[in-house]
Image 1 (spheres, rainbow, N blue to C red):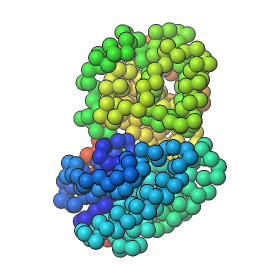
Image 2: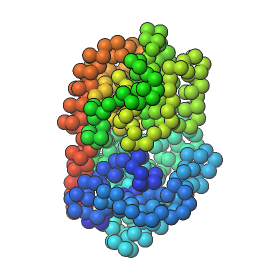
Image 3: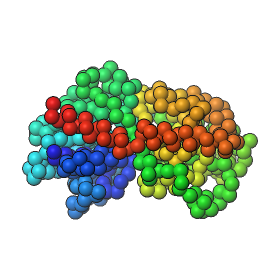
Image 4: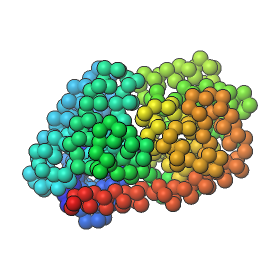
Length: 396
């Protein structure tokens, strides 16, 4: 088959926002299909078409470098929607696409429109409820996001979602039960592995033997990083040498989190690195004793999985994570991680302290976490299942 994969951030490079479809593309290529990854360019000039590990990378005219700018985000999104639709129609004229598959609601909107125009089957990877995420940005955007979600779920041929909780939620809001399939997120267990040496990066940050916590990824209100900051302030009362790394970034809420650190007077103990490349993430996780996921309880967090959970585990790190529904079905409390009620600052601090104060226990929990990843959540195994499903749904 000729298969187009649509994402909303430039590819290459490989990043968290195009990772799932990139991993699917690798498997589809190995199975003999022609795979095209369509994405916007960083800046408004066309990129030369390239090939990455057998995947044809096609960048259309885009402004991705400015997509998170508050004042011009909407016009950029509109431009990307139009240009991505033009790009996929041009590609279809060249290669006759049989399947269009997309991640994220706006790319999915392009996919369903292009599917109507080209006759290709349309499949979606639905890993988030975007309408719930934008609730914290502007209540005015929520009904628009919900309308887009209803359009794409009712006009596609199949949806791959990440948990049974999300499947049930999709069906509840109108998706056909017969076309929603559960394929979880995963991790590259070769790239993320517990043998990575953290000594050089620990020296760079002068960590010495400091007990260390890490949070990495988007810093959004639903991620509850303010809860983590408050909990870490309590940890410092018992372990004053402890350090917290926040690897990633965000918008208004991220600024509020940094201000909270100042208000609590713990600037010397909290290190904000900003965004790092995907390939550098394992080095940062390697320096930590424990990963943190202080999620708030929302529709989104109760339904989804997270790359960071599996990346922490693949690196042999236990995780302190909120007791949200879908993740609680994966985590083995007290075995490979610790579950804490959402928003419980004191409980989160206590769970962190128990792990940081007993590195032998942390190591044992991390080994069990790594085994969980190797057994169930390696990308190649997971995407082989999705690729087989794509082939089946196309032929049925």
